[in-house]
Image (cartoon, rainbow, N blue to C red):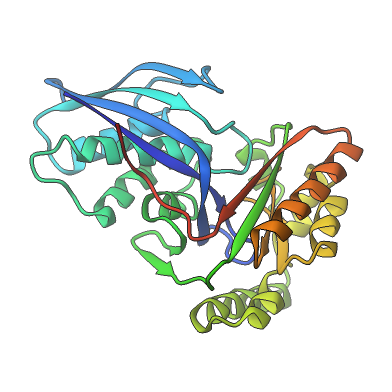
Length: 305
């Protein structure tokens, strides 16, 4: 028997929550098909889709590493063979490496004699995603598994309520920015005041979500810590962000490690119009791009027929 699962793309960091805050996106995602095998190993049979030149070793492939963690950690007496269909481009800032890991553990979970809770799957998927990023952080894994907006730490996921109708627009330029390179840009000295300002923004965003206060969201959704150090890696970023703000965005910043740029709005028509303006700004920087318009409270990973 084989089982297929889909995991959505996501916006990591959400500007103010570096490595902690993320939300799922509608439409785009990765699909993994899994079946049980007698050997206690995770084996990749095939990779297709928008990316195919990925490692298949079960310590270097994010989906296989997540499954090997599941096999070893839960002391399973069998393993899994998987095929991966990549719908998310790598180096896009949309959680592509994490999505494969999430889809893999959700598919494998359906093949267990006693399925595990999402909280356990989260820990194994984290180990998988680390194969690509080089560190353990859940701002993509968390929302991809749970859906919606979440606060994700090393050992737990906290779902965050969002105001009704909150919409994200994400513009993905056809430009690859490797996560490791984006993280290297963060090396250096930081002032204590920067951390205080960033913490203030995160607190305001969380308070705004829980109290349904758009004013608090608008005051807090800005990144003074990470964005200034990564902006130069994204051609046309300043103009793309300005296009979003000029179109009425609650806030805008880099999605994950970039180069995608996201913005939040209170309705789909405004978000769609802003997406077109942001796309035009990338075009003026010489880059074609794709636009995603999605509810922030989008669904997480799930089985598909």
